[in-house]
Length: 313
Ligand SMILES: C[S@@+](CC[C@H](N)C(=O)[O-])C[C@H]1O[C@@H](n2cnc3c(N)ncnc32)[C@H](O)[C@@H]1O
Image (tube, rainbow, N blue to C red; front, side):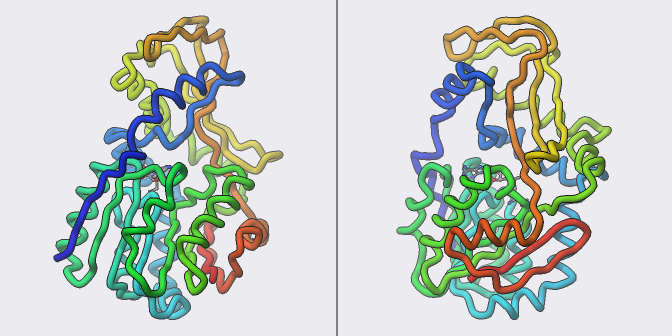
């Protein structure tokens, strides 16, 4: 078995500066990458199991149905790189079929990543597994020294690309292109535009798990930035904005209140929002245009029940 975990310094503490800046801005916002402390990672896995949130199940079913075709289209690959790998479950299908000699997984939530990747390395003894605790938005390029030579595939499932504005998504895909190199490939999964009522339900599950995930952000700030948010005074509010083509997630203040965060005080008016996440939805051709602007040419597309996986070279 070959496994290493490296916690790169960039994974740590932009939290304080980013949160203070986001709460001082108008409108208020907090970057979605801060959802993922340990509790946030567990809650995200629970979201994927909710009946209303079909995204994860559909992507898995699509991959299962087309796996041999996808693997054949990818061909020989030496190294798979997965940014935001989380529980490292989805990449297993590629390890089983593409047989790379190296897997490099990156996640801002370093400890859960290390546990998941360590378990994976035990099972796949022929694959050298490197787990990097890092914020890839800030420092993707810091992963380069950990990559072996040979042909690379960047794997970015789960519609995580939807958390970026189209311009940010293009910039990130261009950085993936550089990391993958000239002969490199990108396999990416994203949610398609669909019935807005279905999208609305997906982010408003009856069990309240998405609400708990959103509110956990405030609980995290209470724990890590000595904040005193009263979670009962904020409401999870998510809706599909058809003009922008994205689901927006907010935390709405249910009263006029002042909250202390890292020694500073912030006023929230009754009904004021803290914007916590966008999840853009795409048409296949819309997404290909974004990828093309980042230097990726589409090789093949697979679609199922409102979800797409595309291969680029
Ligand atoms: C929506 S989850 C998807 C997890 C997994 N890829 C999947 O498809 O099930 C997003 C993952 O990306 C990670 N993440 C979000 N922003 C990140 C960043 N800037 N740098 C590194 N990891 C990040 C989170 O910790 C989380 O594990």
